[in-house]
Image (cartoon, rainbow, N blue to C red; front, side, top):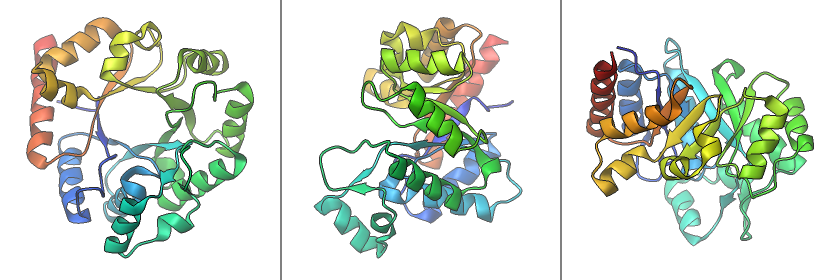
Length: 261
C-alpha cells in the first residue's frame, strides 16, 4: 500500500542525532514508501540539509523529492557556537545564512541568492519539488517578491509558503491561483478556513505532537483532516523520529487508508 502522502520532516536532524541514525531512519522511510522529504538550509543549525543531501547521494537508486525553504536565517548564540565547536564544523557561519540580531527573517536579494546557493550545492534540481517562503513575517509576500523568486529559481521548481498570514495567502492565490503548496501546523489548520479550503496541495505538520499531547489517535486525526479537506490533495508531515516511532506512524496511516477502502 502506498504511503506517499506521508512526508519525512528533518527540522530536528542534527540537533539530537548522528548521520548514522538519520540514515537508518531515512532508509526505513524509503522502504516503507515515503519519497518526499522536507528540509531547510537552517534546520539542525545548518546540518539537516547536509545530512539529507549526503543520504540522497549515497542512495542514487532511490527516487527522493525534496521540499526546501528560503527566508529564515540561523540565529547564532552561545549554544549554537558550542554545537558548531563540538561538531568541528563552522561552515554554516561562512554560508551567510546566519544572523546575530533578533530578526531571523530576511528576503533580500542577497539572502535569497545565498539560500539558492546552499540548496543547489546540496541537491540536483531534479530532486527539488518546491521551494517555500519559510514562515514569513506578516505582509512579506508581494507580487514583486514572487516574481523575484520565480526568476531566481527559473521556474525549475514551484514556489509556495509555510504558515502564511491571511493577506500573504491571498497574494499567493492571486499570483498562482491554486497551483502552490502551503505548509501549516495542525492546530493552525483547524483555525483557518483558507487553509482548510486551499484547492492546491496542503502539507500539515504537528500531527504526531498533537496526538501525543492530547491523546487523540493518529487514525482519528487523519480522518478529521480528510473530512475537512474532502478530495483536495493533502499530505501529512512527521518530524525525524526513531525507527520505532516511524513504523508506528506508517502502520497507523495504513490502517486508516485500509478503513477508507
